[in-house]
Image 1 (cartoon, one colour):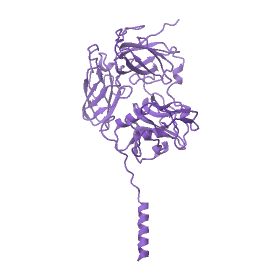
Image 2: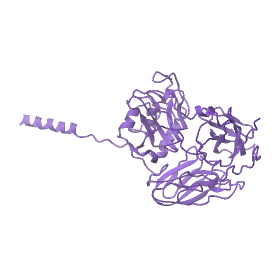
Image 3: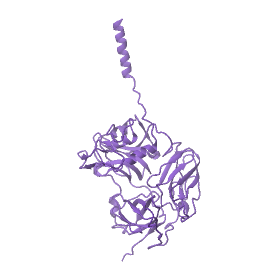
Image 4: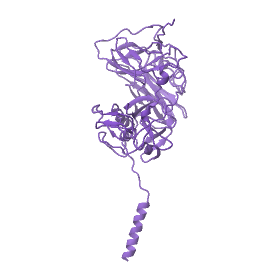
Length: 472
């Protein structure tokens, strides 16, 4: 009897061992919480095999050399998969200050324990995009933060030793797939209440409605009826997936009058429902959005919020009209943006295209900044309506109107024309290609495949004032 009991007990143990183990879902987390964690890591160093950051902008650490043989100093930093694991809080809750590295890019690419693959075209902010090479020896992963999933998109990522953790505009090759964390809670960015896209931008209304959406308000608040609050990316763009029906988009920002717009979403279509805001003190133009039609703003339903008057309302050429009225006693506003080459690959709606590194950006009140290698610039500027100018070797000087509000953040896109269209110019080398430092990962590191080409055609210049030099 004792022998039979032992045999039965042994068989029971084998059945237990052979039974599939249940994988618990990660703790509930909203998309906004994911993006907040990602944002708090920006500025920290790249740390091969690391996964921690403080979130308060201190003790950033540093990285030198070429990974995987790079050298890290400090107690905080992350590589791409360590950063994604921490931001997604998988497999479970983990303090951002606690160093951990549970997954490599191989796990993110091939496993589905705590996440699942989604169609890249339907990626929503806070999803991730991951790549793994054919030999399964290296890869890269980024946190998606908006933009065209197959074109120019915003990402949070631990990009490489010389970059650290960044928030940048870039492209990703077709080898990247999109993955979505399991157990997302609430509405927030993306909404995910259906399969049809409702998107748009929040912009400063220049009196012509959506014919001119150049001047974005990425710091605005946006909500959609029956969906909830949404997050804007750095270009002032929002997007959510909804079921067919009528939706009201409401936007507000400090210094501007709150505005709403109602648009109808139809099955199988992308609907653009951008909202323009005017200055609350009455100094802004009026006009508001026109249309409110299914399939997009004025300018059509595939190109987005396009159309409008070439040359816009900045007035004239070779100098034009500036705002000229500035409040030197009020706290300065924060202006950031990109300098891009105005070519047939540019998309001024999203301010994407070939970037211009080293450009000098100048406000009318004298503040200057130098564009980084990806064309990005930021500066504090006296409040008022500025002609923000940009100049760089190989390009004609150009300027675009930018309304700066005290203690408010505003995005400003400045396109410049190559001096000689037959010349490649410096922008050909600076199209946000991946760096060599992103190559080669054994189990924990990160690498990126080459960038894809920009697929959008040139859009009207949305109020752009080009200050063309007269050439002899």
